[in-house]
Length: 272
Image (cartoon, rainbow, N blue to C red; front, side, top):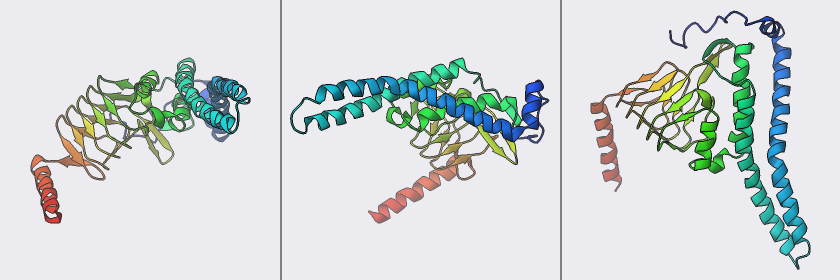
C-alpha cells in the first residue's frame, strides 16, 4: 500500500506512554522541544569547547606582539576556531544520533505519537549541522562522511551538491548519481494534521537537476533525469532512463524532450 493513502488513522498506541502522549499532545510537544534544545546545547557546547580553547591559547600568545598584530592574529584564531568547531560537530552529532533513540521507520499517522519521536530527534540533531556547518563541507569528503554517519546510504562516486536534506536515515543514493545545487530531498510530508514518513530511493547514475524537490515515498530509477526546478510528489515512480520535469513532475517522452531542446537551440541561434 502506498504511504500516500490512508493517512488519517493513527496506529494503535504502543504502550501507556504513547497513550499519555496522545492525550496531552501539546504539553508533550512542548517538553520534546525543550528536550531538543537541551540536547542541542550539550552537542554545541562539546563542539565549541576545543574551538574556544584553541582561540584562547592563540590569543594569549598574541597579546605580546607589537602594533596591530594581536588583533590580526586573534582574527585568524577566531576563523580557525570556527572550522575546528564545525569539524568536531560533524563527529559529535552522529554520536548523539547513534546513542539516542533515533531509529526512524516508515510511518503514517499523527504528529503527536511515540512513532514520530525518533524522526523528531533525528532531524533535530541533523539540523544542528545543516544550518551551521554543512554548507562549508558540501562536496567534500567531510560532508559525505557526515551524511553516511547519519544513516544516509550513498553509493560510490555519488555527487551531492546540496545541504537541503532531511531524514538522511531514509534516503538512498545510488552509484554515480548526481544531486545538483540546492536540490531539496526529504523522506516525509504532511498535511491535515497527519505525518507520513516514507523512504526515498535514487538509482544509479540518476541526475537530479538544480533546485528540484523530491518528497517522501519517491523512487527514481537508474539513469533517470529530473529536470531543474521540478517537484516529485509523494508516490512518484520514475522508471529507469526516464526524464521527468515540471510542477508537479511528469514523464517527458523523448520526442517532446528533443523538441524542447530544438526550440532552445533555435532561440540561442536567434539571440546570437
